[in-house]
Image (tube, rainbow, N blue to C red; front, side, top):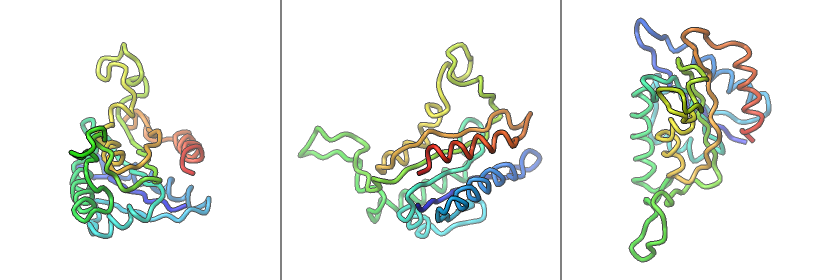
Length: 196
């Protein structure tokens, strides 16, 4: 099994050094390497080659993004990475050929032109938001939405390319509680269940 881990940590002066997401990404890498998986990594903030990133996506069976949640989304460097890599994968059709629709076959649906069938994608996040903020219609901000529903803008990129979306993993309340060994054990169990 071949796994690509995309670490989208982004240090913010006075707020975050990015060490927490680095630790979680390292835990993912160590766990999967220990299971015999071949793992490649990209740390966006350290720079990347767009064509090499397209090739990494084509090489991988499973793609995992490790990301902090900044203002209810991924850091801007992740959006830049996605725009550059996915556009390159579209321009020379390797990741996606089209949006799926054709004039000759109007039944084909938008989002069905992906070329990456058979691959899987998992999103792993660190949140300040507590776990209780999700899946509860009585909660003010997300009004009953799950983490996966809140982050559909992220996973839709991969689904558009034909990739199967796995359930996400989250560490919650990290500004108050940090990431604990219990969180890392939950992560390992999540990987064992879904990354195969």
